[in-house]
Image (tube, rainbow, N blue to C red; front, side):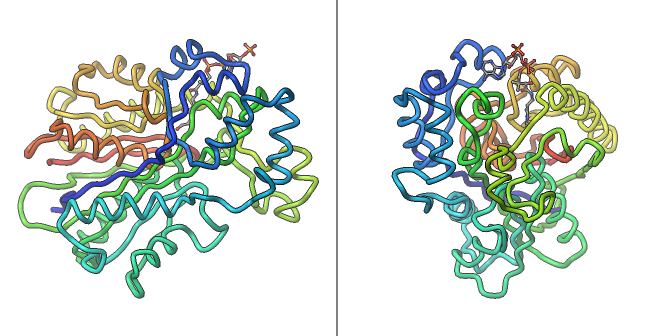
Length: 360
Ligand code: UT7
């Protein structure tokens, strides 16, 4: 079986609470807490500096537009990139497993918005770990990215191809959003972070029991970011910027409804495939999309709330990073013990979703 033998996480030091966001856009701590359960999130130092300036700006829309046009204080180079977070989380996971990067046979990295359009942050991470021939498998699977990565790693290991794989979910999403009224639906939800897990093939009954992945590609427009994509010609243009098409967009209601439905379905599928019921699972770790989604799934499936580990209140939605961050924290708090049955599940852009059951 293939067992997670080390986990690690990294979040930027800058904390943004709902009150700071309320000074930038027409929102409130009460609205955000009631609709999402989020009280604060971590963002890159660039986003943090920008938000502080936006909060003071008399004309928010004009200030935000100037940032997207000219950068902040006349600079457009980032002080933190997604691979900075991926590296820190990976180093911690490797240390936690008692390994070095050279011990790993393969990297599987999921990241929604990369450092460069190409190569993917998986390659950048490999370079920063000083790896010169270890394969880096690069996924852009949104919030389900860590589960897709874990399933791919597990199957490659079951096939005997690799013995030790580093699976990473890393995101630097905060830099993309419009933090004025126009972007408030997404800006309050998403944030930055990275999580990593070292998976090792070992004899015995402990490890990944099964993974179940799905995509409904007919819904891809419900949560999408055009950025430099080929949906426009040319991929980047002044007109695309002027028409505000560089930013991500989301149909929040549709995402919400589909997320609740698909979470419930895939958790049921995963348990049924292994002959277990809800009551057999010691710990549920769901993608931290929104507390209301998690509560609706928990209530629908009658999951005792003390079996769910949640941290969306402190980190917001960190997409591919959210499951490994929550898993790492739950382990560190002693909430995942040897022999426990742990169920991971996620849903996100695509829509893509999945669940994995682990005998810890
Ligand atoms: O990993 C998956 C990623 N995505 C998600 O998890 C998102 C899933 N969806 C959601 O979490 C929710 O749909 C939201 C939190 C985005 C929105 O909550 P909602 O209860 O579905 O609100 P709504 O979209 O129905 O909007 C209600 C009102 C609207 O105003 P009007 O049209 O009724 O005047 C929105 O403009 O709330 C307004 N609104 C806000 N108000 C204050 C939207 N965002 C905000 C905001 N602050 N940040």
